[in-house]
Length: 185
Image 1 (cartoon, one colour):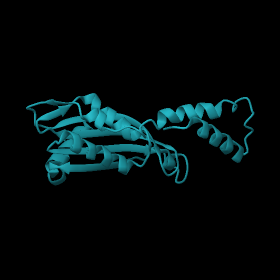
Image 2 (cartoon, one colour):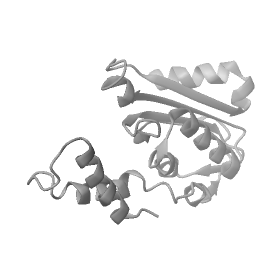
Image 3 (cartoon, helix red, strand yellow):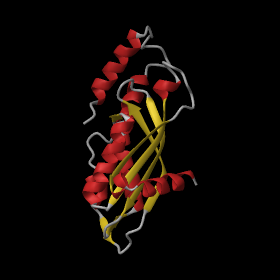
Image 4 (cartoon, rainbow, N blue to C red):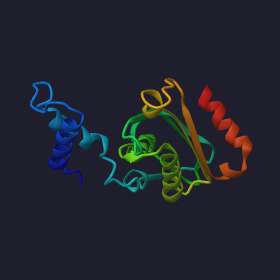
């Protein structure tokens, strides 16, 4: 549960800490705006992907399903700077499919919390395996990290790619290559 009062107090202390005047016209409402923003950015903390992935449909289809280019925005837990990009989810159903929007909602559950990309990739894959019981899943995330872009090494445009394979994708390189090929198209 987000405590907006604590966030507002912390923001005031932060502003004072960097030498700002918290009573300056442009900053008076900033603590309130930031606490409101935090409710949105960290709304996944108390959510469970089960809510989205438990509504499945019976389907005879057992070929590859790929939902690609799911845009996400998250916050790096190390520097509290944004990272953002695209998530691609491929799975091979075993009698059950999920509504496509539910895959995007699952991404949001994990993107809307302080996070690292590698962990987010695994969490999405693990939940799809647990709740859909597919023959396999592959999750690929491509992201730009502002901690690399605007501070530290300062390399804008650099991307980090992480992927996790489970089930048949873990051992079948042909299926992996097919997913990467489809993502590029």
